[in-house]
Length: 273
Image 1 (tube, rainbow, N blue to C red):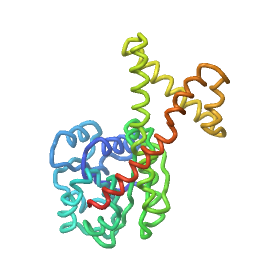
Image 2: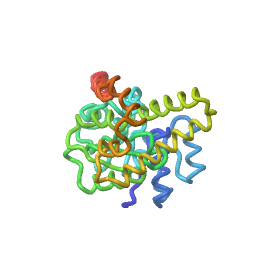
Image 3: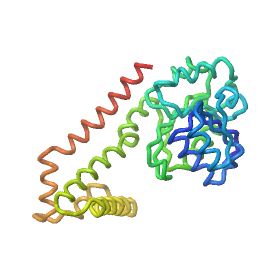
Image 4: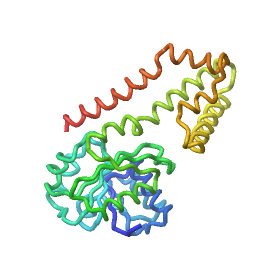
């Protein structure tokens, strides 16, 4: 991986995850700077990994080759304003991991000719098992795209998107999806406890079953999820009876409705910024 000076604006969970991935991959700590007006998260990263820490976003950005905007969408414009006034973005690569803010807004927030990649990661990035969707403006070079790929590959799988609107779709498919699985697992644990298992055992039964199911699916990549489901389901058996309940409740349509709702919300957010 190329060694470029990287400045993170924001030192929250996702910045922490990416920095962890970079350091684990052997990226030099002295090439990484975490910026945050509050010292708590920033100093934790400095102490843990030996990276640089600063409170002045503009000063750190001036000396960076790559700037990663890792702040909440609601404060993005406020955070960007000083950068627009004080930083020359020529020859800098900017990555943003904020949902709901389209490229055209960053051209207003920072610079019309900004070299920008939108990144939509998900929370399993915190354990190096994330999925990130990336969309680059046409002006982004192949060299910069390769760097963005390698950077996000340090925390999981990377998928490039051909148009910006697909960012909203991948939010529904991967960004929000860990919560879908957690809700399903939560519901299974609650029923296991009602059946008499203690909380710890119930959680482990559900967790290890989920892990095993994912591992089995990964080991049989030539098989569809539908085929894997069929292989577990004997006609007239217990699994078939359980699945009947899901189909009677129209689970596939519920999933569709939920994912479409996530997309609509992402589209609404774009209109707010």
